[in-house]
Picture 1: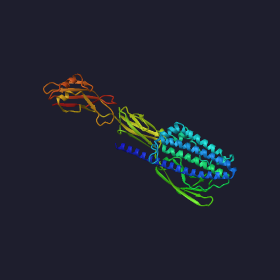
Picture 2: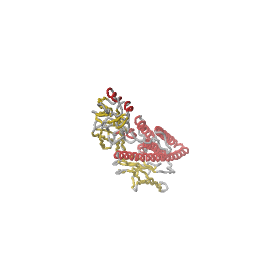
Picture 3: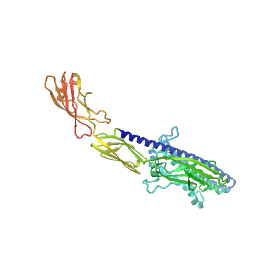
Picture 4: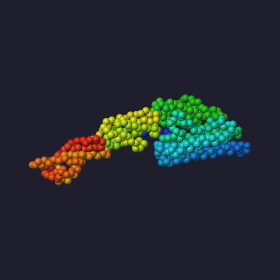
Length: 494
């Protein structure tokens, strides 16, 4: 039982780590939303300046029209993403009093909607189409030059991935709390892409870009849950930035990073588990005044180790002849890749974490759990037969009994005391003997547990001072190949 308690405690610790990770996902999502709002406000200011130029000089009207088309494309795409997020949140039970999705750990909803129902690949097509339409608004000579500055794009699935498409690689078995920041990142990308085009069209009018009224450093992480040995990769940028800007400097934990296209990429190899925290600093030099503004923020992420927990729900052994419920919990790997194999017992999956073991013979059993990136872990179990039942006459196991009570008894009953499984043993046969005080003994064999034939007649002859013996009792329990002998009972009639 001590071993079982340790296993359960390990499972609880694994679940606690997951809760902290999910809270980190929510923090990232809120940061993305805040950043998108700031970028949207900046875009309104740039478009207002472009409208003013078009009103003053009619030759700039074509650029205003293209800017308006870019804004409409961005708004349509942003709202499309928002509708996907809304549907996921509603399917996940809505928001609680803290503004968090009620079923934020649910992986089936994103997998069903974005993978199985095809919305993920539809999203990919929408991203590619929006990017193509935005680039098409640029002058032909500038399209190649500015294409890299538009962040709205789909990253290629790694060649060594076993996922069949981008949607499966990105969303399969991802909890709701992790999917929402990914979708928010696309909303942020479309607004930054809108910024690139608005700055381009305004630049065509010969007007310098005015300084946005607010900045916020952001980090976009490829993965927020990592395991030992993986690389942490995050893109750090200053919201409402210019892709051609050369006036931004970035540091993480005092280390200066290379800034390209207005952003820096921070990479760190993970060598231990636990919460990792880093301090980010971004400096922006005003190109007009030369004034340097500094922005700082701390970001963190959780690193866990791939682990497996297997526990018997009722005892730390398996019993022959009954269903043995098992809970198998794996942390740190996609549940779809988990494999459970057994020797010495059959094993049947009932739900995502519930299994039934059905051993056929006494001995030992092994349960092996493996998965993506996880070496097989083997758990050894002892397999026992069901313990001997206690045979009773009514509710008695011997002693004194009056004649009237003896005469109404129907038979012997085998009882599995203190045994938690739903199992019943059956009496095969037994010998019954009545020994009167001053007469010869009456002896007979009875088949089954219920008194029949001569045995029933002997029971009905009960008289004061008689002694009854129930011997040679044989019972058979689930999983038994042969019957087992149980200790007899003795009763004195009073």
